[in-house]
Image (cartoon, rainbow, N blue to C red; front, top):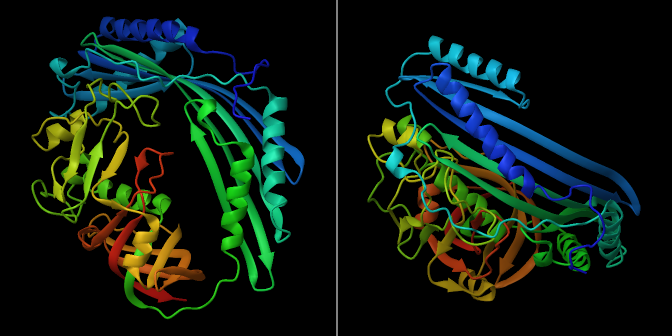
Length: 454
């Protein structure tokens, strides 16, 4: 069921647009130069997408989108102006460049403004195999969504409702150029199938989901597997019981662990560091995690969801350890934030790409045995992460673990600690790695956190 469809798709193939977009970038840069900019950069994003949702056995929505936007940044020495447009006509480009120049004339000079150094521009951009159009028709997408939902609903009579199954496909073309003469572009695709279902019994109602995503439709899980997994997950959450709160080990599922890692990486971002609003300010070379844990970036992995050959400044991307065996080895810097910190860009304009958690890993069952008694977190609520102090407090749901086994589902509790203490207290890394996102990790076992119940 995973073979790419042969029927006509409303999305087509956008590869022919890449040459046109590159020419438009060059035209805009030339216009900015002629109008007096001392330097300029242009970023372009073009997206074409199809989304089909079925709910309760009926086709609910069909959406098609086609968007294009140009971000134009001009510099008058140390003064910066930014404007954007979706109109690529000559008149619209002239008006937009003129608007950016007018903004630059009224902004305060900032010596950290400007393009990244010319010698840092990506000169050898690899082919990363990111573009795989899926010629799926609306009818075929509808059938997949309906089959996915039907499979989930048939698994257990307690599954009584659905938020819908959605088949989505998106093609993108991104281009960036600047007045150093750099011009880079890439084509990419993203296809997905997702489903959320609701189950109920006497003691309450629960909702859970599952999804599959990939650059190529051939790598997606089948609609039947997605339906079964969504059903399994929601049924496992029925029958929540009370438990005794206190200080205990916590096991984060791979999906929740990815968010935890994201919070730590956010504290190493240049913007937080130069503003001095991070609990990891001045942390280079210091230990912030268990010595078995490393966080590594691999931005040029073929077909991976976060891959890119250059960052949003045109700087070449490269693999690097951000945390190396527990020690901060690198900050996450764009050209601007690097200047603010009197450092050099790390090729992370626009963020991190393809993060992997490395270290000695264990099977899921081994982590449960190691934990003994505690809490496994599979859902988190709220935004309770303080980037300045590292304090962490979130609402959660999951499972009570007893004698190394899942005992029963639990909900409406709070987990609290400090991010630094949590990562220093990582006692286990799971080999159950979730590869669907930009941050890929297995389960993470934290030695102790404060658990409170409502």
